[in-house]
Length: 172
Image (cartoon, rainbow, N blue to C red; front, side, top):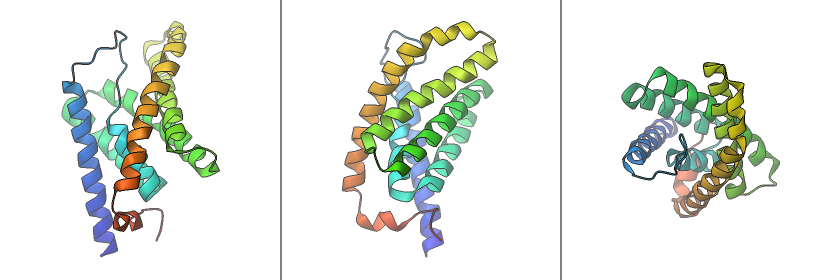
């Protein structure tokens, strides 16, 4: 039963993350700065990290990135998404592990690190180090969106059924 439940929860969370990724493309929010998004799918990543553990979060995030790149994106969008997610997830996992940061703080750091990961990818892809001047804008936007995502994730973590919390790829 437990293995089946893990598969079901993983499929559901990947599906919700994919839907949120797609919905975000339909929202006509323009921050006036290229590349800045709310990152709604990260609500799922942060929530899964706290409820199901780091292995589940990595699995769900990786599946979402692969599937959304295949369905809606390009190889370039895959590179940017994967690099942002790698930086973000690693940072969030490490900060959560310290126990010194709450969900909102971990998510805000994740937002900043996601943007930094994408910036590193952009510098490598374009061979243009001058785009590093974009860092202050990315730190501000990553903080704001990360706090927003963290607040929503905190609410979900509190409200999801306690029975869902036993599912984790981290535990055997």
